Length: 330
Ligand code: DP6
Image (cartoon, rainbow, N blue to C red; front, side, top):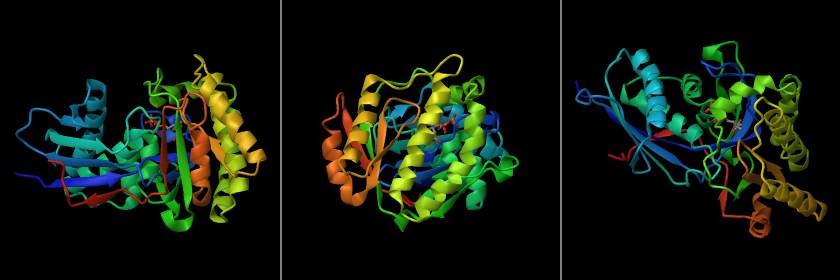
């Protein structure tokens, strides 16, 4: 029987309060809740069609057949959708395209698994709620749970699989923030997030971080809702550095920062001292995300271009939810 073809778009997100470490690696149940902003200018578009005539899942990303690791990760995720729909054994063709460079320090796994989840469920006719789609996307990549709802989103730890999903705390138009990504490295990271999450528990600092984060998140959410960048900025910087302290004190230790990362941190501090309201956050890599209001973005971007070792700058506004679109990629 022919199945419907479906296409979804999703945006990556930048976490203000980070996800690092799982209490259940297989289910991707996080050690702590997290809070993020979808990045509206950056988009992953994914078309899925289940097709009985294929031998196995076929996955194409940005015009190239996916490598075996990426293909089998996508296949494992499609199995969850197939199981739910009673279609085990029916392969799928997946074509996915990003409008942002892979390796620019933007986690394409968040938008990738959010778009894959929404498109695959629609392709098999599964009518899931946003919560169910978010919890399912989480199984592919933890941060993908936060790319399913729109705007500013919070991922709840939950009690178990069904209750660990993200929901919107404010829509994209709540606050016109910008993420100015300072790309200082395009190299593939030596240790990816999935492995890094497994190492978090080996740091003696992780338990302190996990104990502190829920209260930090509550305050961060409150000041985000009050448009208070000064209060929020202090928290997002502290949270990012706490996560990197855990990484650097894991066994083996993970050092994602390079001299260019530190130079950007120090520049942000001095720009602030000069009266420019801008704050940094850093994911599992050396690139630095500068968070500011739209009114200051030209100044922030101009200064960011003068930082040592800058290869590229990407700027994004807040973005909406993952959603179905009519135009297919094949
Ligand atoms: C540092 O969601 O990429 O960006 O579940 O293994 O795919 P997997 O991990 P991922 O981890 C994101 C880590 C982070 C912080 C964050 O986005 O919260």
